[in-house]
Amino acid sequence: MTSSANVKSLTTLHTTLASTKALVQQFEISIQNGIQPGRELPLNPPNPLAVLSDAAKILSAQTTKLSLLVLNKPFTPSEITFILKSLSQECLPALVAAAELCPAEEYSRLLHRWIRSSVSSTLKELLNLFNEIPTDERGVEKTRGRNTLASTGVIWDCCNTIVKFSETGITALATVKVESYHSLLKDAIEELEEWQTGEMDDDDDDDDDSDSDDMVAQKILPSDFQSMHLSHKNPARNEPPTTNPTTNTAANPFAAPLAHTPSSKPLSDRVLKTLRLISLLFPALIKRRIKRFPAITSSTKPADLPTTEQLDTMDDLITYCQLFSEEADELAGALYAHDEGEVDERIGVMKGYARKCLARVRGTWEGGEDEFSEWVGKWLVKLDEI
Image 1 (cartoon, helix red, strand yellow):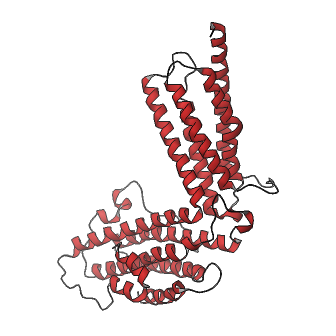
Image 2 (cartoon, rainbow, N blue to C red):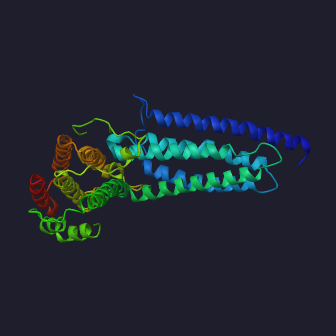
Image 3 (cartoon, rainbow, N blue to C red):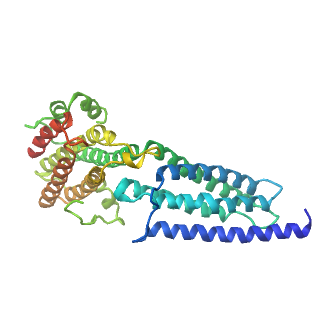
């Protein structure tokens, strides 16, 4: 390559890189703002998950080529320029199009938000990778090489996750989401149990007129639900969490000891009883409702999409599961403060969420009844006993 040709290719790379960065930033703003009101979608739009999955596969492959060209010698600006132009013309517009082709009213708020979040995260990391591309013959320095590899790895993870959930669909995504909320709730229960054991080990009177949690599970859960329980020993309230993130006790109310009073154990027992009963809901909801939801995957045709009512119910189910985990933190804070009135109020709020949630999902997705419908009635009886 002649010197003048080399200078020209470097200049082209510099210009292309600048325009590609600007395009990514523009797409990021578009994703954050969402679809503008009045914007019309194609008459027969393609499946957004299929578009997203295909774009992610291409991006992963192109990112691999790009990182190799950046790291290896000889430095070839013309080949890097070619990949950047290819990304700008095909892959990146497809990623953004997938977000626009997935309105919440047709594909659920869950999928709509997940696609926007996934595309936004991918674009941000792609921009980091672009910032590591050198624009001179010296190529990339060793430290920048490590940054290149790190960004490439993150983009691979983003793309793999996108492809996975595009193919497995809404039920897999919802399951992961609800399981994460369940984990938070189980953590709160475990911390409270440890705290109660430490604070109340001087109280040997563990007798209780109520059934133990395992006995409750055996009485009100179908056999397949029992095994799940035993193996894992827009709602009315909209106030934001009131915990103070600057203090350790707010982040973990059980980290600081609670002053012992005669009423401490009955109060904590009631909180535990409530949280354990709520915890029983999660595996049942996942198995009997979430995993039986009509499929939305990369191969789902428009005519086979769930109804608006089904989508709204699924979104509400996930919202209630999130509220259960958030309200558990509020309940823990009230218990730590030994505010019996606040504890009663928080338990009432959580019980209200549970009743509303089960009212939404008591019937099957087709409107009938099943074993879960019968179980809900028994579960609600136990809730009323608290």
